[in-house]
Length: 305
Image (cartoon, rainbow, N blue to C red):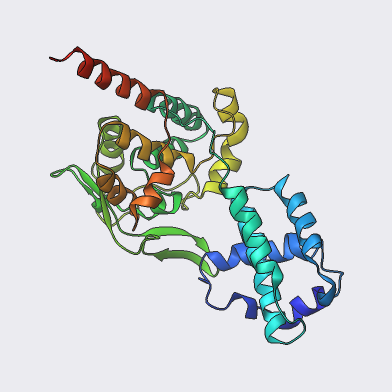
């Protein structure tokens, strides 16, 4: 398997975005796939072997890392089918089913309320102000880390009080990569009051073409950089939010908009989703939504018969 993977080079990455996705797949192949079944003949890689490999990866890696690893393995075996080393890639269906089952587990992590995010931002600010700003922008704009990195000062419109998200910026193969958002279309997000002081400070007397936010060394802040610089897992646990992921900040922003009674199709536009069903997966029932429900029901029951 290892010899075969080296012989095909990057052929297994055909059709994959070379600026972002390819690096994750390449890492999955070389850091996890080849060290485990790499010494086994391609014809001898069985479904059970793949299952046991996934079992071991699930215990130590995030879902995103697991996804990249499974995708890399599946794509290499697809190439083996094309080269007629094996007759079919039964692992594609098996690995995909295992991954989807893992994804469909209920998301039980606590979604932070605005006060929680403010505390996280304050703790991150003590390490460097840019980290605290990044937390606030991610949550209150319901934006991805790469989208926060892609914001320019001119994207903040104080007349209409909206922020336009039309690009993402992140370190990729060959240097800094700038491209459209994941949905490949610009979207506008209203400026919420808790975010105003941050945006005022980042935009006042600054050229419209400058990046809105950069890290301590002048680079775009990635989710991995934020994790390593702040000791994110330990910091979140110390604030009573164990297991909180950086991407959960985007989920939190989406949930706040929904809890405020914003129609789901508007929330979907704010998030940049092509489908409302995708947006539904981002929304989490929490105490706020339950309290709002109780208040509306109580008002209804107290009304005239």
